[in-house]
Length: 512
Ligand code: ZN
Image 1 (cartoon, protein in one colour):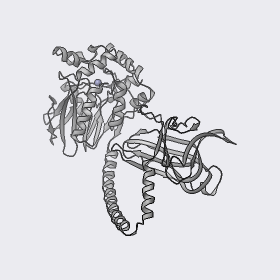
Image 2: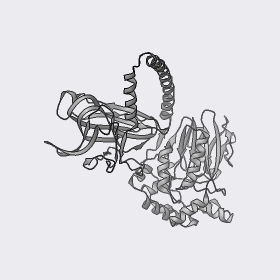
Image 3: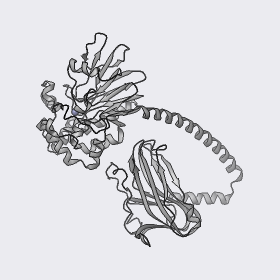
Image 4: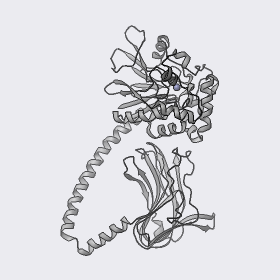
């Protein structure tokens, strides 16, 4: 596995964006963030949301803990404290939940990570001196560990002499008789008199460590500070950029280490990267097999199709296909999905779906939060109406009317998802009439490459035999088939029928 290990972004979106682009160009399997996503900088919301989207693993930083309300600001200096309070006023509960859910330590196959220190990750100690490094080396069994916190990149190395010493950033291959503590530096608040973002790439199979430095647009960062009315002297690297005068590191640090009594607990203390690495390996193998099978099947089908179409396709058939194609081309979409919704999903186990307002979906008045795709719009209509229910009173329901078996798709607004998330979806159906075809409840995943995968679908058979509401038709993406790739999740009702069908109690929740 090749890991990109980043730290101390501190709400600096200019720096984070160029680093994410650099990481993409380097080709890594996984991105690990060692904490302090927020604090100091002017763009906490954008930075949390891109971290949520692109970073695979996190540990908790002291600024994150304070912004999430897990740590008092009494150990921060006035500048840091002011900017934590300012950050708290900009982020919402979802952002805070995300920050506070991160563990204090991550354990990989032959390495581990923490924000500041491995001997007491909940105290956010600094490892600056050789003596501090010596104690750190006693606190972990692996040959190498990664930290951030001081915002100064470099390496503590210990060999046969038993005396650790500090080395400036340099690429290296792990040597058998040595052990290492690597400080990856800071993305958004460098303090090493170098105003470029710093991070590391670690290949845990080849045992290589590379340091990367990426310049970012400081002028744009300064404009963002001015817009947010944050004074420039809140970021040491700007002072250095303007004056080229350096200060001792201790004078630039805005945080006093926590005493043993003040230490943070509660966050799951160690999270293992191992099972996910294994899962990734297995899914890569599986993916190769699936691709091979798909290619074989496609080739077979293509050959068969070529043969059939050459020999058997009648003129009538060709005309019908042409008509069908035209209908698909003429697909009408009434789209009521706003693309500016918050990127963070709602809390686990809470209902995500909201029904639209009563009425028919039209181009002038699409359903709020839903898109309706009709493949034969002059023969198909979708309404949201109130239907009374003896037991449960009036409930909003969709009425889907189709005089052709062409496809109709109702999709709820997309939810950004990460690998490993689990969901459960359900709905109830009732037929008014059903001459042909079927209707299904689906979960679709739109991947970053633009392709869409049907994760699961359920066709309620009951609808054929009964004229009353079906039981809850549900889909669960659970333990064994959790989301396997990041992307956008869509809750969808998909019909290919001629008749009239009602749908109600549309529900989607994220499972713990
Ligand atoms: Zn920091």
